[in-house]
Amino acid sequence: MNTAPHPMKCPRCEKDLDYVGTKAFHEGHRWGILGEIGELFVNKERFDVYVCPRCGRVELFVDGIGEEFRPH
Image (cartoon, rainbow, N blue to C red; front, side, top):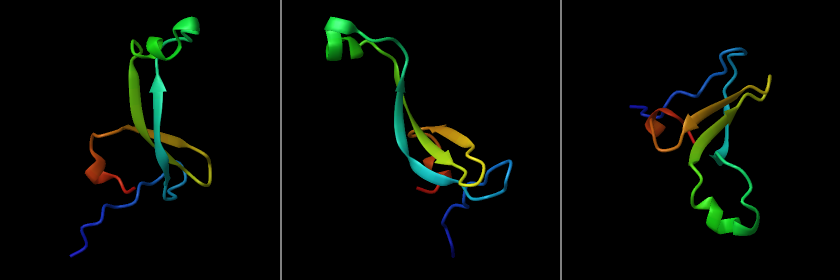
């Protein structure tokens, strides 16, 4: 029995999306002299990123949610 998840497909091209890693994004601004300490007060989110090799479309998924449905 094959339990591997189906590949992610581009909604435009129907090509398989390539997983390119997990990226951290944050809200806020540069903290100047506070530097790294200021980053403690910034809301950060991590997203799994998938890219279509044909058209360049990018799909973002929240890291840690629904990963069993996405191939890595």
